[in-house]
View 1 (cartoon, rainbow, N blue to C red):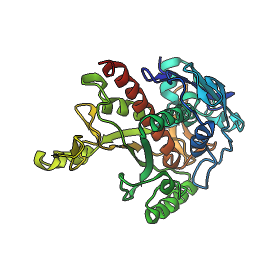
View 2 (cartoon, helix red, strand yellow):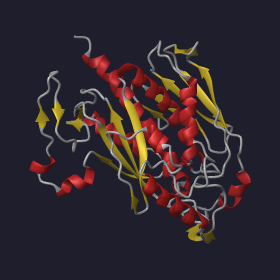
View 3 (cartoon, rainbow, N blue to C red):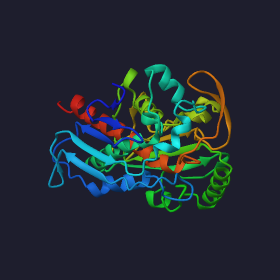
View 4 (cartoon, rainbow, N blue to C red):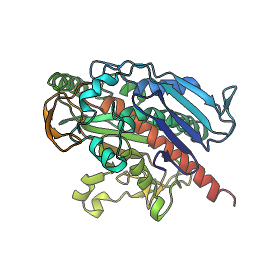
Length: 362
């Protein structure tokens, strides 16, 4: 159903923002994979709240508990169940919003669909649900690295109208994490941080763009027609909270080029592999990876829950003015970086297993 994702490498997410905890069941991970719990925790630490002055002040250690699927640090091939307990819930902060619909939030649509909704923190619509994705993505990341040396790196490319210059071919996680806003362009990062702080003090919020690259991805991943690699990547990242747009390779900018300018010319190589002179395709052609870096960009809207007074309605349809309380990110971008990495890693892991299943017998 709606809380499961993937075909062979498959996760099922559970839990609410202010419930007992959030967790994930990872099914289909191959057996005998050395799995470092410290690596899973490191990814969760990059996602957790309370990291800096530009993120939500909610204080959660987000300590992962592995309930099944591991023995002596090696996967068993059985479901890997992980849970993170919620510690710093404050349901009282949401009492004014229990029956008031936050503009551009999921409150009204959840109520329309289910006739009931979690009264605090957004429930399943909260970004806290992404703990499950990041934990599952951390398993996928270790699988990709172990089998093919694939590395997935994301970064904040844009906040509001501030745009960084980042080279997908060389950017590293260390460079990304060198600033609290997770932008490796240090000069632009300083401006981003100042902008987020200023807007947050006004009780408002900002959106932006996360860029991501998967390097050393082998050719052949993805399926023709409906299960194209870029289609699955789009579904994966667009399932993240607050996402509003997806681009691969040249994206919308490619529409301003001619075919002679946009086409990626093939190059002869000494080892017989096929390479391209440029990468406007973003590493995917015909829905199948071509061996070049897979590059995507994901647009995130400004955080919906803000302290500025906004006109809205309550569950009875009466007009009200809402100045939201609670602890919310003035900009989701810094914490969205590990979320995007996780979703991209899980898609690649899934397609890696699908490729092995279909095309490796003969």
